Length: 256
Ligand code: ADP
Image (spheres, rainbow, N blue to C red):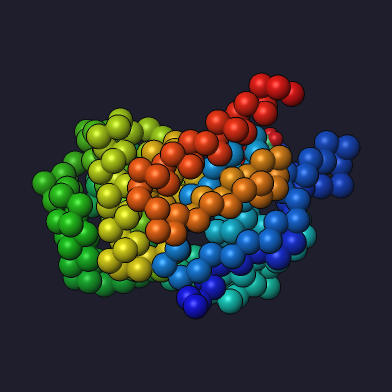
């Protein structure tokens, strides 16, 4: 049995807590991610996917319940400890790449290490290594707005990987990419997961993107509605099942 790297117990998130506008976005979520998992989170817009991913990755804190990452309860850490812990354990990939246009691609990729005061030589070695793997060595001196979406997302992946995280958290990572670049990104993530054992938790609305994962968590109205394990299914059969789950849910929304 693989080790649990991420776990929630009775996770609840209420926005505007204790005000007349209080809104419970997540209710009592119990969930585990094991080392080497590749989990996709799907669900209708407004169902709580981003809230969930933010709460399991230290970006936000639950209103009640517990979140454990590598056995550590996030609420028990100080904000300083959370920053350090995030640097050591987590890599983030976002839909809009989140690169700084005032910095070169090299500087963007190096940023987590620069902030952690790693030596210049070590930074250079690591940036060059990753840039080569992602095929963007020739773009390192350019600024993000001089590069294509696919190239920027590859730089964002380099930045996410620069500190050797064991867990990658991705929120709609292919949301701003065309289909060829999306497929390429998914192959990169799939390889990281299968060859290097990096655990991945990713939000997406696209069944094709989910078909690269090993488990689907379907969230609806702040609750886990369905869990689908890929198990021995081919990517094509898994894709069909993912489509069925999504279309059953969509049909239900139409009938309401
Ligand atoms: P999804 O990612 O599935 O689209 P979200 O997690 O963004 O859903 O949002 C879940 C629910 O919580 C939605 O009803 C949304 O309006 C609400 N919500 C999200 N962020 C906030 C916030 N900062 N303040 C108040 N309500 C919020």
